[in-house]
Length: 301
Image (tube, rainbow, N blue to C red; front, side):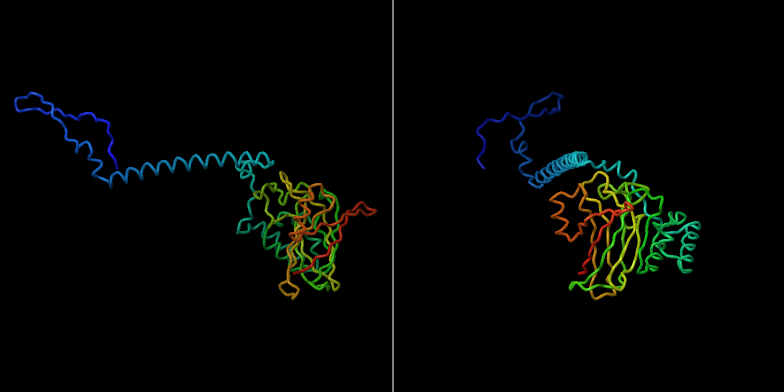
């Protein structure tokens, strides 16, 4: 590397002589350039500077991303993360309390004595047990090929009947398969404890409004419920989740959603996406008793 032609200032130091007088002594240039002879130290110093620069840049980037995320959340109508976490639905604890055990055991005894799942799911005395896995398993194990009602008369919302047929890939009826339905309330909540916002709140696995039934010999089924609302702070269409359990069927299985063609959230873009993902967009009709009704065909794959 070519040395600079600029004259560097002379380096001096003060020394004390034996007679206590002071003397200025020139410092050799090699001392002034000692750092040039220690490349290892230079590299370490450079690495320290680079590390601190990287850390500072990373912190700045994280701060910028956080601000961007908050801005996007506000623009999309989502609550900030801190606000969402404050009301997050807590799953049932793994250990049943004595009181809950009594409620679930009571429901089991009622089902074993011949009571229908409709009678249990519409009985408010069992409402607190809906989120518990053992209660839900009892409802599943008691599924029958008959219409099922999953809401009580006091449940707010528009009454809805979901009727349909399950078929295989050839269009043949599939009988005796279990269908699991779950949905939000007329507020768009899966749980009564918190709303479902941005995938954070609520708990779809433990939705309060749920039910199991089996298809009859013609592959038909009927669910009586209320029309769900879409999630708050979201543009997703309202829907009912449907899972057809095909473990014991050569027809396969199916996980889908039933949406409603008169939902204002179903734009042309959403309609195309729903059809691409295999969701069912059902036509809604209203009967003489002011019950809305949809008829669907669920094709297993």
